[in-house]
Length: 166
Length: 192
Image 1: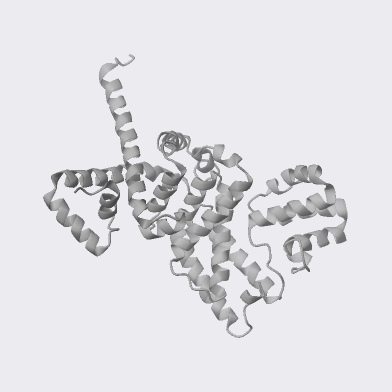
Image 2: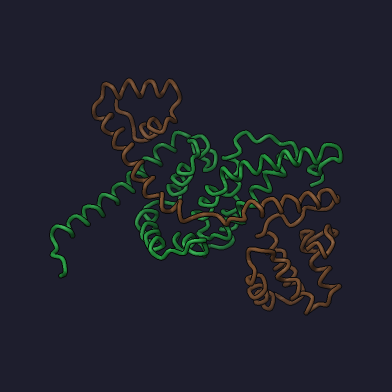
């Protein structure tokens, strides 16, 4: 009875349980075919990881990623301490909510257009900061502040952050 | 979310400890999570959003007193869920090649390595099924079989078989192109 490729891969990755690894090791000592297969699998793993190295090198996260995570956490803590609802917790979520507010005030077609123009100018920074002047121009300061509070509050419930915090 | 609201006494200490935990986890896993996100979403921005959201969720869970047995697997799973949810909403992203998602917008716009990356994406990643690609990515990012099984909702026994298949495909492709290169070198006369 020979070992299958999955077991051999797990064995060479050190991922078999202790008894299973012991059984595999004993089998490999006495079975040339499986020993060769195990060697082939080990070599294939090396080739695959080498092929992957360039991808790893090229595909790096933005340098300020940790800062962004920390400011997200701080924002959440501030909101939680104020006893409010969940603040804008993710950028994607935030953009969705901005979209909903824009649609409410401008209708879906104009909103889609505005969204393209406004947040894409500073996509990585602060989508609220990008959309605020636009809302202010169209709605006036007070209504814009209310819309932004609504976005930060998750589109429902009472506002959790002062408009100037956005 | 009131159950997650920190109590006044000791809340700062708790949040600080959790934040320190997050920083360590971030340093160790962010790059891998990001690469996994790029492979899933074919989009840098979506990947980064998901990574950020996953760490925030981790913070909220830990700050609320929840134990996370395997933080690494937990984070990868959350990134996966977030991205698969958003991919359901938009199917367009899958059509973009991996190279388009990771070559640009970085600190080093080196056309030569971008070209090689694009070449590699076409050659290797195109050979793999989405599940194989994910499984290989998770392993390349250092997840144990048990963790991969958890993230992809597989039996741990299947992980080895999937990886063996992936590695075989990549090796065969690699050998094939090497043989072709040797053939060209040997058989075809060079242009003067």
